[in-house]
Amino acid sequence: MASSRSLNSASLSFSSQRLLTLAQQLSQYKPLPSSSDEADNEERIIEEATGKVVSQVGFQESATPISQNPEKFRPKRAAVLICLFEGDDGDLRVILTKRSSRMSTHSGEVSLPGGKAEEGDRDDAETATREAQEEIGLDPSLVNIVTLLEPFLSKHLLRVVPVIGILYDKNAFKPTPNAAEVDEVFDAPLEMFIKDENRTEEEREWMGDKYLIHHFEYETKKKKKYVIWGLTAGVLIRAASLVYQRSPAFLEQNPKFKFPEAVEKNTVMR
Image (cartoon, rainbow, N blue to C red; front, side, top):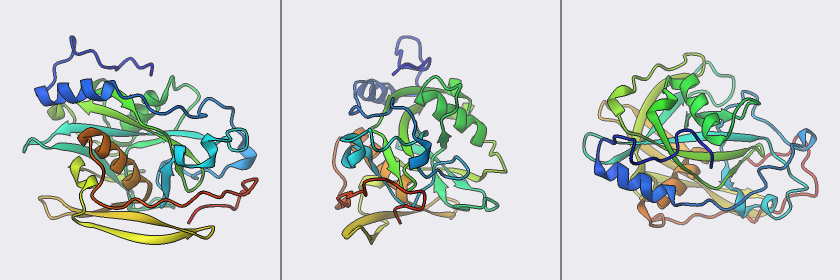
């Protein structure tokens, strides 16, 4: 991973030893290789109209046929930022957004900052931090990028790369939501995404196979309530499993991904 904000413990001042230890731990993680460097095939993909990363369904790409047969499927690339910091109570927390109610798609839903890669982006880290700056005013210089996770595949066959970064000075971040895209910025404890508390599941079917979509309910100290689900929940389940080095306390059930020979423009996972 090439990033100007890669881990350099000698030059960074972290707010706690815990964050430094976490950064060192995560920087050793190597995601599974994917077909991410393949050329795009615009005739065989379906894109989110806004370029943002919100989907009812999202699974790790390594579990899909794309990783075994990259010549048939060449999705567009996107990245989301999993920005972690230490809360006042000493817990690890992640920054989330509530999409603008004025958006034509997925209005009011919770998502991680992120969006599609642009031509000038050097790497996934730059895509994620650029989008976070545009959406919520998070200065990229405040975020220490430590690792990437394996790509996820959205229901629209968009390859989404989760980028984990650490906000080492939370007081330096003053959220300034872009009103056209974001209504609210909030944070939630990362560990909740591997616990079975405040979680419900919804069973759906994909080409004859049943799978689960996880919904996590979260209420802030100010009594605001949010539901985190779909692709965002899937990404955070994986991130929390890596950070806390343990599996979720619930079943993750994916479909068998029996994709057709070619993906038509009206083919989506629901």
